[in-house]
Image (spheres, rainbow, N blue to C red):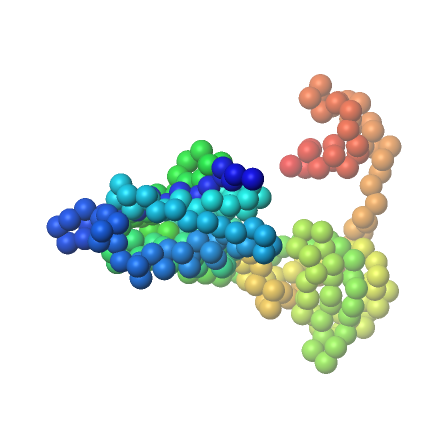
Amino acid sequence: MKRTDYIEIHITGKKGVDNLSLDNYDVAELKNVLDIIIKLCPQIDKNDPLSLTIVNGSVKQIFKGSKQRIAMFSTILSLVVGNPYLEDIESHTAISVEELQKSAKTTGYTYSITTSMSNKPLVISPTTDYKRREVEWIDGELYLYGEVILTGGVNPKLHISTKEYGKLVVNASKDFLCKAEKLLYRECGIMVKAKLNKYTNEIDKESIMFVELIKGYTSTVDLAYIKHCIENASAQFRTAMSYDEWYSIVRG
């Protein structure tokens, strides 16, 4: 079956005084690009090859692959375009983009990357600066809600399973944990202090310190009250939906 989905990398620049072309494009430079593309577009299975055609007109590399494989690459591309600090990008993807940016600054080349499924190309050039910001941690306070699944240890800790952050380990005092045995396998709310990423609000999971228990917290919802609120809400909030959906929309 003929494959029509593709990734295209158009490389422009100079080799000395000459425009970049297939005649002066070094095979070592080609290998660097291939290594980066393979990292960004991993093979899904052994029957899913990524083929390469190189076209003149500066240097244009066209990689053809399965629809699923090209779609995955297109998704990565859409996350990087217009995101110079590579925020919310997985580490291995960010490293590959940074390698391509370093190459652009070293060689003076411009890389224009697109796919058969992309609306906007990713352009990496000597004047762009795709690079993760150094992590800057700030002190913050936040509330955690979830089920306490473990307490104790040589270094006293409380383990809580939350919907928002997953499983977290909270440093706590022995005195509190002695009083908190009845919290085990129960839903609760706690206030904690932690180091937060200034740019992404990511939690430094090693820094979480217990501050206080939120008294009177309950995970149950008064359905009669919510029904009353729905009935008296504006038209846009009276559409048919579950209580959970309505509650989530109202709370943003």
